[in-house]
Image (tube, rainbow, N blue to C red; front, side, top):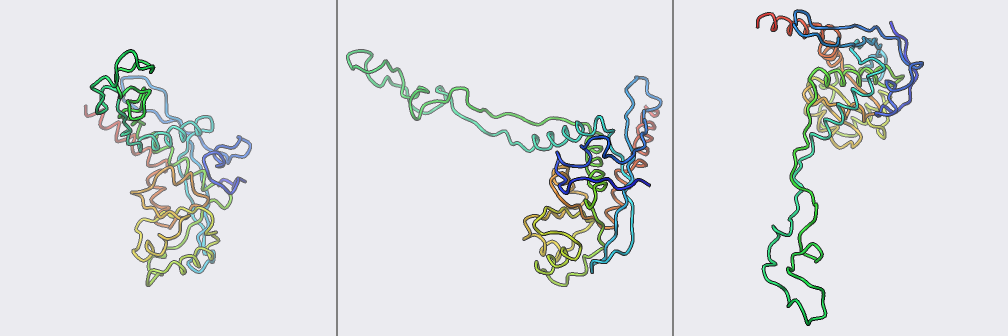
Length: 280
């Protein structure tokens, strides 16, 4: 079992324990995975298995046990680039690309010469819609554009698991809280803030909760806390993982992450791909 690594409190992209020097990293086991039965020769996909032990905290704030998070991560020499490429893809794909301006040929008006060519003392002017005049066209202005870029599905999945593993391996970066959906009888932000303090969470720090199902009272009790993000497996994204200071999971969420982003999940995908290629 790997020992805990010392890392900064912030889990942002630049301060995450994943991107520190190799001397601060937890020992990892590298596994080379390549597709079998394929006619083409490709570079094997190198991944690492990183084991992190997380404390389980009760609703009252007492430690009741421990659990583990065993996720695949990118190797040290590619982890930063993999996560960076994935976050750039997410942010760039959110751009609508609808910014648009009108050139002098598209702007309304300007069909008549404003004044005669000579004998006025003014500079020669052929249209009121010249870019040199207010209300005229725009030179080299923005036009509608598709900013979307593509990233491989496995690469994006590896980036998410790498970021989660980095947060879990940092000291105090992640905790597991017992299911608390039924603990809130009615929506009340004050009760949720009190529960966060019992769990050792500072309401002024950014926290990301990952739950399989979010109870209605829990959602309403936490939605007024600006530093908190309540996510489900459907809404899990890389930006919120890197942007949070504390990662809070439930036991069901830990099981989901181990099943979805663990090494065994990667092997199952490769087996499925191999079977599909064999059938073709």
